[in-house]
Every structure is written in structure tokens, then in C-alpha cells.
Length: 114
Image (cartoon, rainbow, N blue to C red; front, side):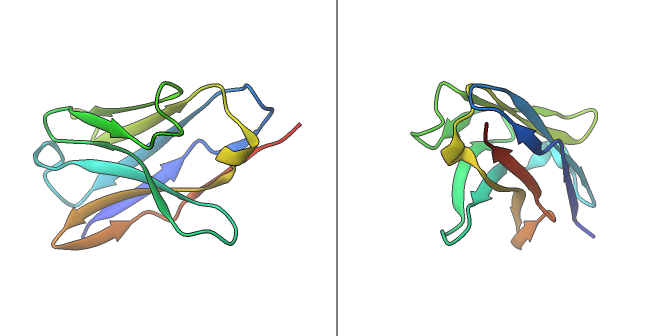
């Protein structure tokens, strides 16, 4: 079955960087787009970045220019490089694929605080 396992979250100071990873299995990875979502306390889950199977990317306006989504079709993984982090980036970050239905990872906590 589809499995998505996120890693790489943590506590970082404002202006710092983190790289999130999502290891995927249970489907033909190179045939599908994937995305990263985040959910802050008391807020709705929002789409942060997506990458198509052809490598086309798109971003939430508030992270464009700071975050970069990428994929490795050999390792079956998708990444989110986050630079110039701000306190408002604090959230649980989830990997997502729409494959018949939505599939989510367990999430990884990112906390940006001094």
C-alpha cells in the first residue's frame, strides 16, 4: 500500500534552514506528482509546494523564493529545502499524494523560534 514517511523536522532559529524528506513506497513513484502541506495550530492545512511527475513546481506565495521542492526518482523521495525560515512557518509538515484518494504521511514538526 501507499506509504509516505516524512523526516527532517526540528527546532530552528529564525533565518535558519531545514531540509525535509519524504520517503515514498507502494506506487510507481515517477508517474505521479507529490506535494508538501503544512498545518499550524488552529489553522487549516495548506498546500506549501508541489512537484509534478515532470518536475514542474509551484509554491505558496508566502514561501516562494525561500522553499524549494525537489524529487529523486531513483530514491523514491521528495524533498523540501526551507531557507530563511520565519516563525510563521512553524507547523506540522505533511507529504501528500493523490492516488485514487489522498494519502498522507504522519507529518514532521517544524518549529521556528529564537
